[in-house]
Structure formats: C-alpha cells, structure tokens
Length: 66
Image (cartoon, rainbow, N blue to C red):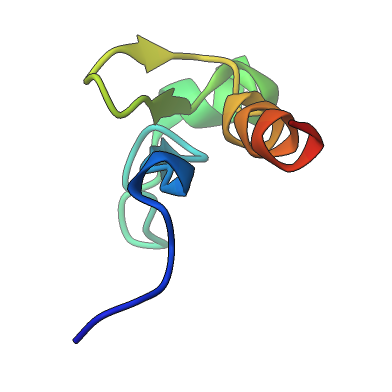
C-alpha cells in the first residue's frame, strides 16, 4: 500500500474524549461529578499528554494554513 503524502504532512494523535471507559452497568463517578468538560486527553505524536482536546484541531489547522 502506498500514498502520495509528504511524510512531513502526517499527523498522529491519540484522543480520549472521556478519559475513562463508560458503561451503563458501571458508571464512572468522577465523570458524573466532575463533568465531561474536565475529563479526557489528547496524546501527541511524541507521547506527551494534554487535557486540551482542541489540540489536534489546532495542529491540523496549522498544517493547512502553512
């Protein structure tokens, strides 16, 4: 398999919008009491973690703008 993308244009991120596993059978109390806006994280391609869930969108916008 191949592509025609320049390797410098590839962005890899991990994202957990909730930061925890949620099930109907076992609700997560932190998620319930802290609220969704205080949960979740993004993982950068260098392995660092941030709670700024907009980071992947901001990084993508930088590459499109440049």
